[in-house]
Length: 117
Length: 112
Image 1 (cartoon, helix red, strand yellow):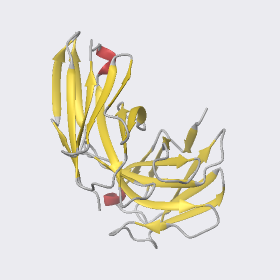
Image 2 (cartoon, rainbow over the protein chains, first blue to last red):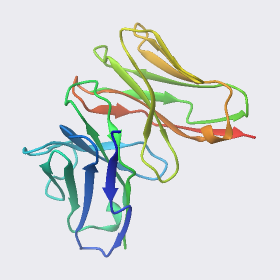
Image 3 (tube, rainbow over the protein chains, first blue to last red):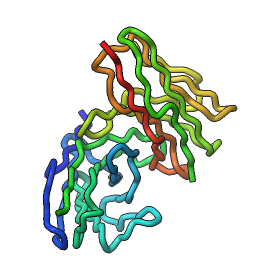
Image 4 (cartoon, rainbow over the protein chains, first blue to last red):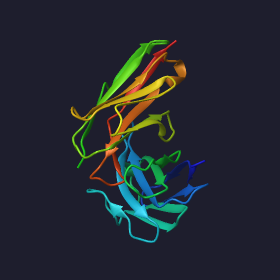
């Protein structure tokens, strides 16, 4: 149980285009979903927290107009990287929690490798 | 916010030996400490966690200890196997919310 999927697993795009990444909880309803970015050989950095039906909360330094998050339902959150540039190339990982309370286990997706040419 | 430090950054052990990874945190209100294993090109997987009401938790070859006074917690892997090779991250809650701050990671290599 508690499986999170991401689609696509990898994407290559041209500079200036937009890319959408989907995060789905397959066998549970996710109260909260998180989006992380991980550069090579570095740790996971939280980008934003999203709850179904409300606006995402972005971490300091993350541009909300560039990284659009839509938490459409209790099983789906999407991250759209708008006007992508090579410096946006990274490994994007989502996670989800069930109860939405502090100390909840986060279930992670397999990640999406974004390469911007 | 929470500040999590993790050591060492790399660790090589012979198969069968033990491995220990340590983390310190700054927020004394933190009460949940998960450990994740991340294999190359994959998302992190929770391997064990501990809450502040206990000092130690064990699951087969993996154990975690917590010292709330000193604000540090450690991951212990005994009888290491080649498949234990991965990057391990500790984490601690940030600001009392669901979100966590990750440590910098430890690349563990188990040499057959």
